[in-house]
Length: 339
Figure 1 (cartoon, rainbow, N blue to C red):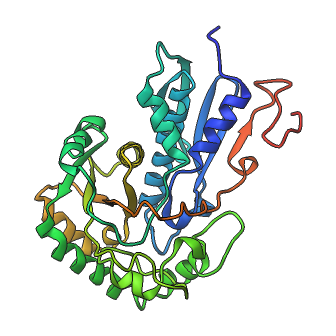
Figure 2 (figure 1 turned 135 degrees about the vertical axis):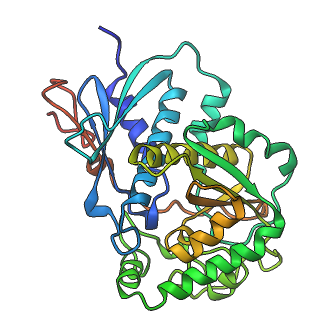
C-alpha cells in the first residue's frame, strides 16, 4: 500500500486551499478525505445565482482552490494526480485527488505554497509592475495551454477595458437580484465570508481604478492618493466552456496569482466584465479569439510603506473538510474530535 500523508498534512493543505479567492468570498467548496484520496465538491448553496446564474464562476473558484491545494501539497513532498468529474451521476463532485510521494521538492514549490498566505485581492490603484518585461514571458510557460490561454493586454486596450467596466455597471445598476446579492455578501460584515470593509474602497479610490466592480463603498481616508493607476492586465481565456475546462481554468488562475505574488506583485482578479454579454463581447474583441474570456487580473506594484492588510475571513476548517471515519478509523476531525 502506498504511503499517505498524515491527517495534519491534509488539514493544512485544505486550510491553504481555503485561502483561494472566490466570487464575493463565497467559498463554494468542500473537501472529503476518505483515507486514500481527497474529493472536491462544489457547494451550490454558496453559488450566487443572480451574479453567476450558470455556476461558471463557482467552478472557476473551485478550480483556484484545487490549484492552491496542489501547490500546498507539492511543498510538503506530495505529487498530486487529478481525475475531473469522476462520478457522472454527481455533478457536484468536481475532482478526485490522489497522492504519491514526490521525487523532489523544489524551491519554486516552497515559494508558491508560501505565497498562498501572502496573496490578497487588492482593489486599490497600482503603480506599473516593476521589471514586467522580464516577468511577462514567464506567464505562458507556467500555465498548461490545455488549462487556459494567457494574454497580456496592451496599454492601448485600457480605454476598451474601462468602457466594458462602465457598461457592466450600467447593466447591473437596476438588476435587483444582483444588487441584493451584492449587499448580502459585501454590504455588511460576516464572521467568515463575504467582502469586509477592510477589503473595499472609498468612492475616491474607486474613481481612480477604471477596471473595478462597483461594491458598497467605505467611508475612510483615501489611500495611495499619489498613485495613478498603471497596472498591467492579464486576460485568462479557458480552452472551452465545459465544466472540466472551467475547473482547469481556475487551476491556471491559481498558478498565475501565486507566481505574481512570488514575484512581489499585487493582484486583483476581475470577473464582472465577463458576466454580461455586452461587456464580455468587448473583452472578447480585444483578443480576436473564438474562446470565451473568463477572468482578468490586474497586476501592479504597491508602495513598500503599505501595511499588509488583515486577511479577509475564511470559513473554519470544520466547514470545508470532512475526514471519513470509515476509511480512517481513529483519525481525528479538524475540530479535534475522534471520528
